[in-house]
Amino acid sequence: MLSTPTARVLDDADEPAVTRLLATDPVATCWLAGRVEQVGVAPVSLGAPLWGMGSRDSLDAVCLAGANLIPFARPGAEQAAAAAFAERARRAGRRCSTIVGPAAAVGPLWELLEPSWGPARDLRPRQPLLAIDGPPAVAPEPRVRPVRPAELETLLPASIAMFTEEVGVSPLRSDGGAAYRARVADLVRAGQSLAWIEDGEVLFKAEIGAVSRAACQVQGVWVAPGHRGRGIGTAGTAAVVEYARATIAPVVSLYVNDFNAAARASYAKVGFREVGTYSSVLF
Image (cartoon, rainbow, N blue to C red):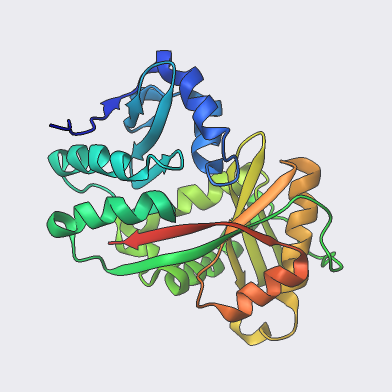
């Protein structure tokens, strides 16, 4: 009789194995790898438990169980990892707002969790994961630059509009938006929020929301509605790529909804290539 795969909460002693596992796909695991590089794997440091499947010497899968549930598994281990992580997730109860990560890990996990956690508010099963490791293929917009701390109040309405448009709910619905404001302010202070601001108006914005030594991930790309269709998003994203590769990491990535044809065409012009597929389950 086959035994059911099990997962355990990882601690500092597991960090070398976690690092080796995440290094097998540095673009797909950029967010997790960056957090581990910064604070390690202990729950008290991460702010949430990191579940793992495998031994201290060789892990086959990990899953961060925080505000987002983020699974990652070696190729071939996805089904076993889904069973192990679903068992823990069901016992803990849903505390996350999103399940997000490589589609091969998210899909089977959600299939097991949906009977108890579903229905989802939105399911995005195919989100192409894109990356670029060289100069952008189009001229960057020179007016895109890091946002200054004094410009936070100018940036916030654009950030809120972007979040609401992309996620389908306002970030102000929980705690009046305090956590979201703090997140935006942190990115500004870190030099990871870029925008084209003209006469007090944000025409373009984006954040480098995840950073590891090997790669970074661009998030929150947005063009003011009245300025769309003019190539601002393409030139603005090229500027973000140029800045990120010069100051943050050698590989720049992002993921995009497969149905967003305009965004996908824009990113292709910049020089992004598809390197994988993400999935998101939104609650």
